[in-house]
Image (cartoon, rainbow over all chains, first blue to last red; front, top):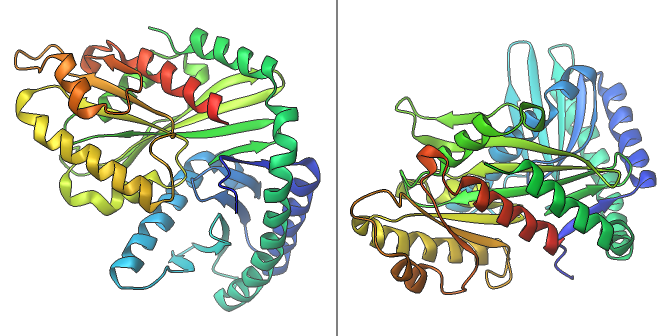
Length: 164
Length: 191
């Protein structure tokens, strides 16, 4: 597969992703659901509490996941597919989608972890199929978004903002 | 890998500051956090030990605002510099779009710098990135130290790819934004 330098998420794909997250949240009665890129960037988020801290949560959760993969390698495991962080009130279940994305569910003590695991797996499979479409669309859509005007404007903004 | 969200009109890029312990990676981020327009930055997050050494990473989200309809964001990370955290550095590198290699210019740090850049090259291979074409800039930090090596020496041994390099004294902000401008433009050019 061609090594992509970016992923482009279209309106249609984001709507589908959001619907998958919303369904997962409703079916498990979770407080929120997020889809992260493994670099820590937030692709989509459902749930108001989480939305406020999404950027920081994204960086931290992706960091935790990435760190656990290194632990796995030290144990001669390929990777750990899931991470469960259990709190008194709130818990987090994170699972990997096709080596690229992380599906995160945040839920309280009234939700059973078994249900979260099963339904996360189902949602991950669906998200995996969306990721495939995103990957193939990315190469096509790239030039229409990142045109010359955009590139030159972004350079001007960088000069303006990042100065002593 | 940068994320371009057409639906929400957002572009996110990840930049990682890499280098040996005490070379000034966190200091770079502190200066950016202190000096940039507060509307253009989020909260800086540091996962540090009790003695304020970076344990996992520092994180500073920057927001360029809306450019041609796209809200462009850079997420700056640092890695922990101490040798024992090699695996943690690899974890933070995951998904990076650009790297700033911060070198401590002092003569007694020369060998450590060499080892660190070799480790970076190896880590890039591990995550499947081609170091020869990946967005990278060098920062020669601590230029104010009396035992700082001449820049041509640093260039010869640490910058074999001849990528853009900047002299810096990050503690008082010198060269910090020049470095950030260069890596940001480099990352955008490669998207």
